[in-house]
Image (cartoon, rainbow, N blue to C red; front, side, top):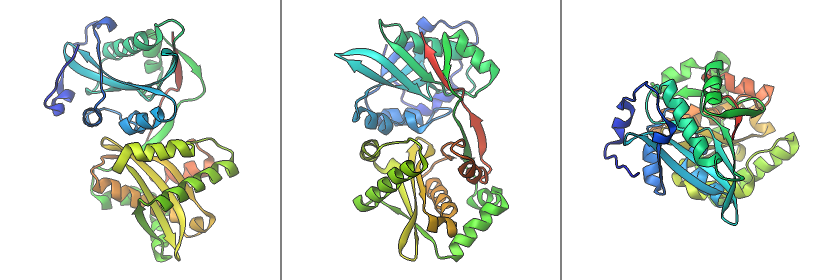
Amino acid sequence: MTFVIDDYSTIASVEISSKRISASAMAFEGIEDSARWEQLLNRADRAHSVQAFGYGAAKAANGWHVSRQVLSLNGQPVAMVQALEKRVLGMRLVTRINRGPMFLIDNPSDELIVATYRAVRRHWAMAPFSILLLAPALEDSPHNRSLLAKAGFHKRKGNGWGSARLNLDQPIDVLFDSFEHSWRKAIRASEKAGVTVQVVDGETEHQWMIDRHLQNMAEKGFSGHDAAFLRSLRQSSGSDYVLLQAMHEGRPVAGLVILKCGLVSDSIVAWFGEEGRKVKAGNAITWAAICELQRRGCLSYDVGGIGSGKGFANFKSGMNGTEYYLPGEYLGL
């Protein structure tokens, strides 16, 4: 089933019946056009960068098959999802969905949530030898976990994703005043120390950021995006891939990569050197990123996770964003 929507701003106002909805009534449409995908993404209730078109394209450049689907009910789109598939000889063996599906209507009913997740499970998990691993974009709660179970999903492992978002749809001085005193003090101290921040887009600066990121992972013993993926992500995302660099006395002392996803922006990679820490460059570069993203029309800034170590989590918590937690990875059978 194919549908055409001329005015995407009307999607959020679509009224869906709270009566029983069958998963078989859901229609899937594949989306190949990046502009259309991003236009829909602007309407998503909880957009995440891992569902951005450029993110999927970067994964495709590194061995995954990408399937982007819009789910409709009675001719109206209600959800969208980007799935990453591992295929062998054309046969889909494993599908990963990270922080999806995303709903395109406000406050979906329990029936619609169950029907949507059940349709996703049937679409990707019912083929022979096919496994579906899904990290849903739902707030972690006993109620939502019960809805996932009703849709046929089983908790697989680990804790869920936790992060926080800042509301950029407010005057910038009001946002600044919402930070903890220590955060505001650190930004001013960094300015006094002569730290400057700029958006950069040269090959040298991007390679510098990748090198710092790889060194950081090796020194601190954590895993993250590799160099090939970051290069592909930059190429596939265009101006939505934003690199900022903090300078002190002519030297780069901090770097931050942001990915814009619809009206949301996520922190992807960050590095703060020892010299940068002394002059509070981490605070300065993060604040500069927030101002830049608001200028670009983003309504929300995601700090990029709050469970990545006590010190870094404390750093992020000082911005007083609205915390959220997702329920972790599930298996669809």
